[in-house]
Image (cartoon, rainbow, N blue to C red):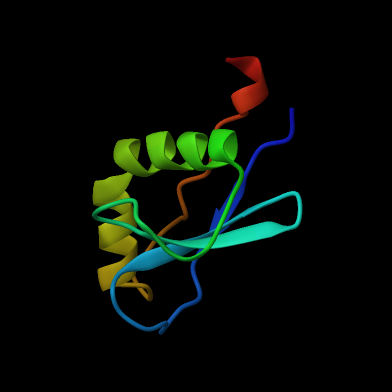
Length: 82
């Protein structure tokens, strides 16, 4: 199974969010709520991204609030090993 990928565009617009991509589909996901603000992903991919978002919400908000000081971007684990 392919894994979704995620990323920020630094100095992006509010609300705090990240971009998630999966096999040509892309969605903008709100960090705090998990709402797809724009775009869409297949249901299974969106579920994996939301699980990851919940696990990393604190780090995501820290990175959003201080992008220059952010030491790393938390990555998705290899979901195919689940």
